Length: 166
Image 1 (cartoon, one colour):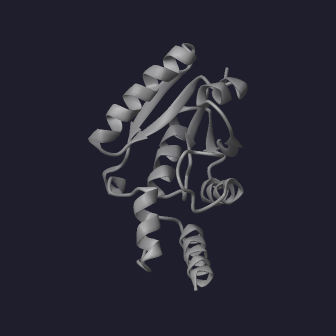
Image 2: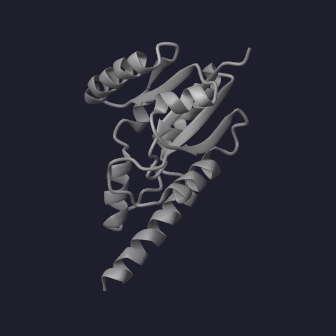
């Protein structure tokens, strides 16, 4: 029986840290579904279809990783796709507290689904989507943090936002 996992997130935008966690999860599980959450409670730079496409391009080379959008509770989505685990990435110590509470809540909602936390590679500790967005917004170089197609999408989006503001 193939063991399937869901790696959920807003991925606004997907970055090298996300990609690292997805690839490492793909070595543990037979199939990993990178679930792009459609309406997180945060201000988004890219809509769900744009985030989905950026993630699909970034993860296309890995055959057992699939990217899909989802709504609602992650555990409900995991059950719907037959996943036995939810993958979460840990960057810094403060992530642990949040992920620990989330894992416990998910366990109450779906006791049959395990939460698996993967510590990020030390090369990606300082990378977060919000930091990348801020650097890109100010015209900084994010090429070491995101794949080339994401860097290009950020440049285009922030140029368009600046044009709209003028």
